[in-house]
Image (cartoon, rainbow, N blue to C red; front, side):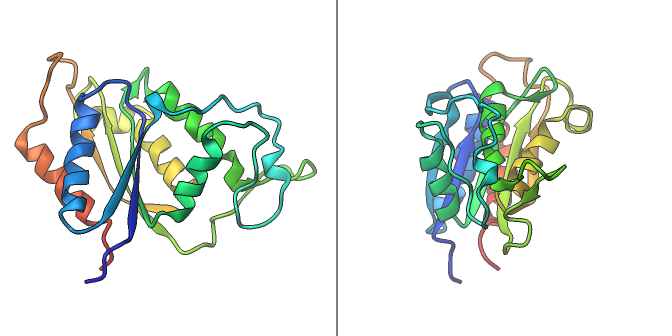
Length: 203
């Protein structure tokens, strides 16, 4: 089997070694064990500014993401996204949504839209491109089933994946995460994380 050359992990959790970090680590271990190169971007330590909503990047035609006017780490991150064959997108649920740092990253993905000022809605640059694969990871204080359907985090992670040209292979959603400050993921969940990560490999 020919493996993917590179999987990019974008982690929107605030906490070191929290539930999200543990799930991400299990997925990465499975991929590295299959001979896949992985790189992790922890957004809590990554230099991304807030979108200015100037839409300059959306005025530039073509299939490649538009160039932002801000001089920060986003262009380098977009280059990493473009060079990757699959993704793990992760963010816990805060106030019914992905974390603010993941939302900030999502808003900067407007560079993946072509949206001239005379058009009422954008055209997404990767809509017709060959689809890559993405694994989504989230969690909430509510029970998993309730949190997955009641809050917007799963939908937002899916939207981010589709914007960069990826189709989700599954979502690992952990519930009841607030019952223990130092909660460790159960073996069953870690096993699911590893199994889902393997789906990022080519058939």
